[in-house]
Image (tube, rainbow, N blue to C red; front, top):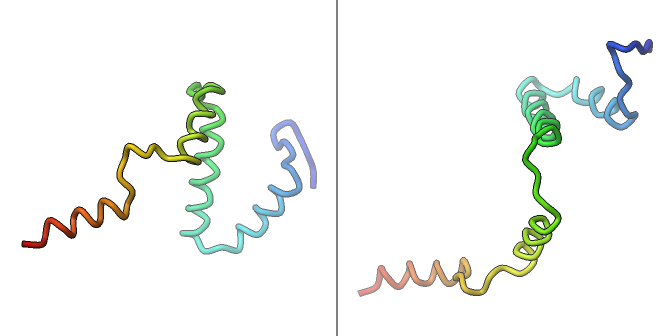
Length: 84
């Protein structure tokens, strides 16, 4: 394997993943390609959450706001609407 300034090296793990991905059907390769592009484009984005915003997201995911109804409560309410 030759390395030049036009062909920068990849990590061994990424290189292994690409070798395995070559054996996938075209539609799966396209899905994988889209996922990789999403990750790369997110890293290059000018939009980033602050540390406080990231912490708030973690807090909300770990402990949802009890002011909102749970999925079970919403389902029960919809079921009650159908009763006469």
